[in-house]
Length: 465
Image 1 (tube, rainbow, N blue to C red):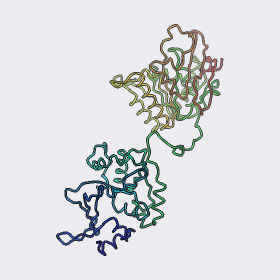
Image 2 (image 1 turned 180 degrees about the horizontal axis):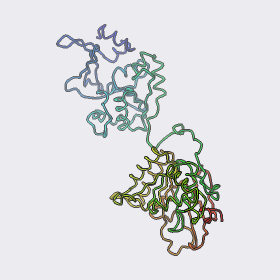
Image 3 (image 1 turned 90 degrees about the vertical axis):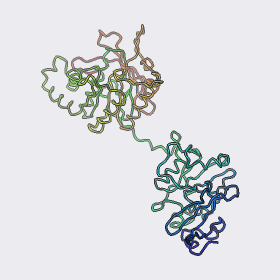
Image 4 (image 1 turned 120 degrees about the vertical axis):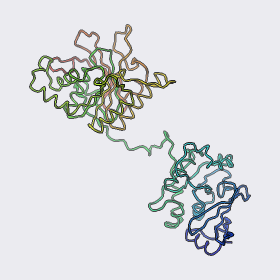
């Protein structure tokens, strides 16, 4: 029987003594004369263990040599849904609210989630009921709302399958269902279980999991001939290609110059062009709008230099030839440029000058795919327009402009780009070429098209031909 002291303690927790009697809770007296509340563990109807609880100081122990299993384990039979709690009294609170198919883990929650819960001794008891657990359609993981409880929920979901699991969000001031029962009553327990949320599965979502679409944040690209075809859009990845020595850097300088003029911070990884004087002066001439011959005596030259100094950050190993800049180092330097300098446009010119470190079993295509995913993830996370200048393979008799699929290494350049831009000059001796916007991802401003352009030598800017 249950003594009055324990009945009062249970009823204070919202658990009727009739329910405690039904679940065979008993008061037992130890050899030293202390009263303990005994909670039986049965499996297939057989008593396999008991947990003993001191209600005054939360001390508990189990039968020496007792078998671990779910408390109320025999309810895991058939299909349907089962609620799993962290402790027996939370399970009794669920029963008090009208649910029958509820169990409790026998050993509480771990301090931290486990790296390999499937093979951990802590959860070995689950294999006793593996066949029955496989038949269950869904589980509500009603573990405590503290860190150990969340760790337990993570471990259970890893073992049982997150696609079958739900979790509960507790109201302010409550960390488990027993507290909810005492503070808010049975209806709130029922509501929380009914509204349990599906356990997150990485990569699988409902539409409601996605944030509402925000307005695309874009800036003018700075080359009037390109305005209707593309923009500098924050959070996007642009691939800019064309055969070597065609003038891609001149086009890029014009775009950077117009950003700097509008006080948009830029970070450029310059590996083929010396930062000073070539990169700096090319940008400055376009900012001023003067010819090569006019530039050195132009009255606005120093003002252009000063603005470039404030708005342009350069990633380079020109000051230390022994420094290798691989993808991870490049992205770390970009992160610093964003945080320290507020960079909004990041340019890698060119891709092949990075130190590329492929895994031992990684193909070039696999590596480039992984690298582009990292670049796109960076652009989205830090809300920058990230451009990569990537050279195509040699033309080998081809007379027309290259495409994104011609870029050395991988079709991922074409498949994963948000914008694709190609610069081509059929004859390098003639100041005439095309800028071809060959890809614009759906939802972004602009559209594909080919624009005839040339370098206006009087202004050092790219203009429509």
